[in-house]
Amino acid sequence: MFFLEGAFVFSASDIVTASECEFALLRQLDEKLGRAPVLSVEDPMRERAARLGDVHEQNVLQAYRERYGLWAPGRGGGVAEIEQASAMTWQALAAKHAESMAALEGGADVVF
Image (cartoon, rainbow, N blue to C red; front, side, top):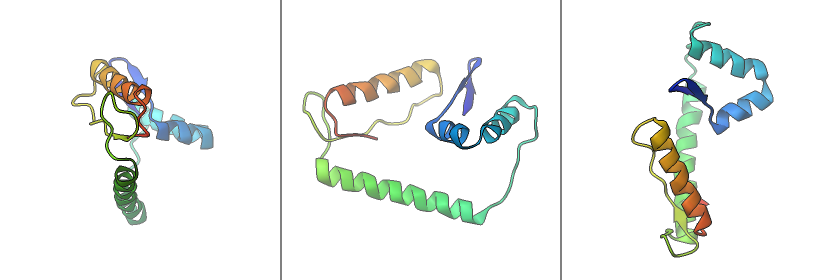
């Protein structure tokens, strides 16, 4: 979740948090608004899980590349890899959304 030009932008993880515990999402929102102190807890297990999750994500992506190949506009199938937005602006996010939709509509098997 982040604040952008007067509005909050929620991630898929934020939606999961809200479905599991509304208080947790509201607590994060209060932190973003400055209504509550930011909780900072060192958690080596969480940090390790995050690192392992990143490695797992890359391994799965590589397996998809090997299975489906790379997607190209005008050619169905494959893995479309959308680069992260260069800036967190509505314009940049809308452009990435358009790229993702074009890949899906163009028949990509996987959009990453």
